[in-house]
Length: 326
Image (cartoon, rainbow, N blue to C red; front, side, top):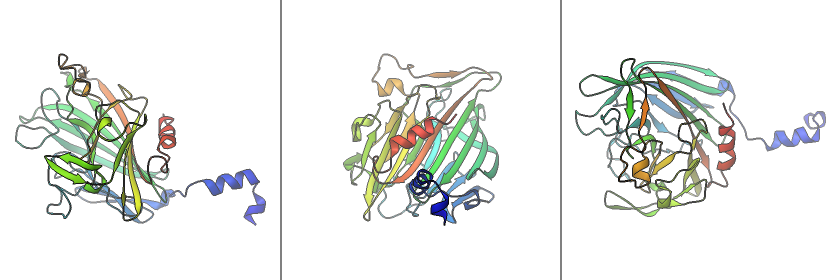
């Protein structure tokens, strides 16, 4: 029998280890405007790179199929949703001030767009790997940035992971200035049922039963603008607790990052908004980051979709595992 062939310690480790999806369990299906990713035959997410103001991931599903992002504005009129902030598109990366151009909002022709140039994909080492190259184009057609985004998507029987690595590259002839604003950057808009009780958004009271907590144990609205290695957002639904954590990798510039996390379900890591987050009214450029002409900067984050609160989901341990990756 297997149990007699294995040393007792090895058997204990085997039994304690979480179930993991093998490489053959992760699949990518390509369409003209998106890549669909499944884990063990179950839909996980779609990387949509055409037909939107920027590439996004939508929908994003927990291991049991529960949607973990808002539907609006990709779908309108969905019961139980507040249709505010139309630029909060599921899961995305952008910034509100690049050379003075707003790539965060979408409410006029004077906003920037992130335009996809190419996408490649493969399945390797138990994960879907997507490499996307994009241009950050201003309203007059000027390219202010280029990026290479590498996504690694994988899962276990009870968790899903998105590793999001983005390298921002300034054009050869001009530096790129990422301005100090709270409007950014690595972001997800969660479902309304995840909001903490009595949270506010656009003057509307939300009645979720969620909790926001960071690595220092600070909770809910007090997490906004704080620096931390990770933040977790979790809430009960239909007798089960669902959580989403975002991890800031130690190699990132300005680690640990500031968090633009709101109790109305916006959840974002923002390494550029220092003067907003620290209320430095006399230093409006305190968080500005300049990429020299022809230069680049790389950021790495992980999204961890889990069951349970931050303790049951072992968020701190999962962060340490991510932080150890080089």
